[in-house]
Image 1: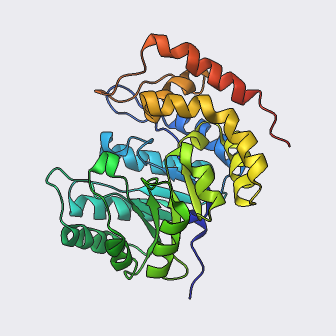
Image 2: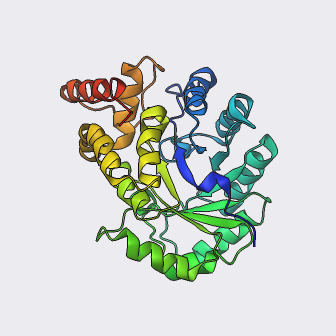
Image 3: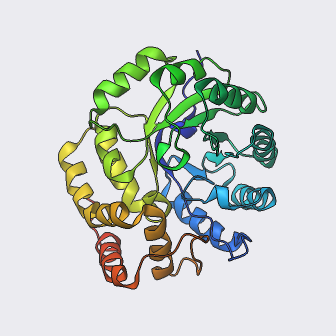
Length: 305
């Protein structure tokens, strides 16, 4: 049995994809973000995820983003590339683009306008998974795709060659341990179970999740990695201490949406000068002092116990 794909374990940092109002990717700004992540030594990078606004970019701009990422961090840190698209043939083409550019793994969401059935989602994943030899993670993100994977469908998809992991939303009942146990009983032993929604992922790691797919790690990789390592080591006290430092940011994420907040934060930090793609708007001006204060607390944080 092959080992779990390294890209789907530990802390995976999901950066923004800075672009002009016309959707032209600022590759220099993207590489600045990626260099910070690589320097911090997170376990992987999740390029063109939801935080990377993949659905707002053309195929050509996605190609440019992947090429810039491979040029910057290729061979240094595993690079997961999101390949979600409305049409199956487009997702297949994006998967092949990413593979030929040098990506290490793929992330696929069942993006749709017409709600998908489970059989339709399965066929979509089967086509994309077979388009390359790269390991692929199921992107279970019902808040954006409006499609929820049943545990039975995840088990069915896990039988496909290359489908190696799932990126889960937080369980509604907060019971990570039970959900992880059920999933692991239904999938191969090398299949990785990870979570997103940053404010719940410390507990997910403490309960045995394989991976934290993190928005904030794309912005503050060093601080987030300290938190992730404490949780992965089972050090609940240290994880709680560090997680408390992030609490104001978690509140802002839940209030305004993490995408809006990290764009505003990146501009405040001077990492780039870009706005989220329209029609998404930046947070209102009255939110900016709270974002600035949350950032300052984390930038000055004591990361050592």
